[in-house]
Length: 114
Image 1 (cartoon, rainbow, N blue to C red):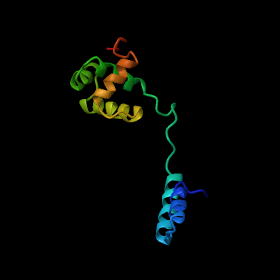
Image 2 (tube, one colour):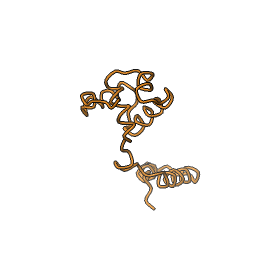
Image 3 (tube, rainbow, N blue to C red):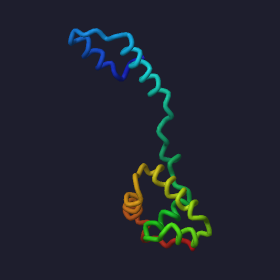
Image 4 (cartoon, one colour):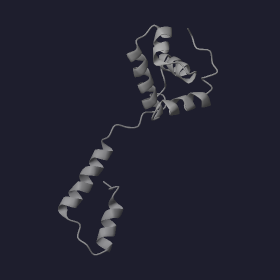
């Protein structure tokens, strides 16, 4: 196994310091955890559902969560869930970034289904 932090070990050795067993164990454990993390989602896995896209269009057009909920006959909390899922899938941080993304994609120009 090649440690990602191998350069750290080389640097320590080059400087004449001893790499302690506990530090080496921490490096190995960190690398093991990194290798066993869940893989990044593929683009297909992070696609938005039709409903998430519909909610995104309405958010981009400036509708409130309450208005979106009434238009789509869903609860306010469901709208919030769709927005949160969309933020996560698109790796965005807030509603402003979400609206900017939607506008860049032209979703604010498309007609929303009522």
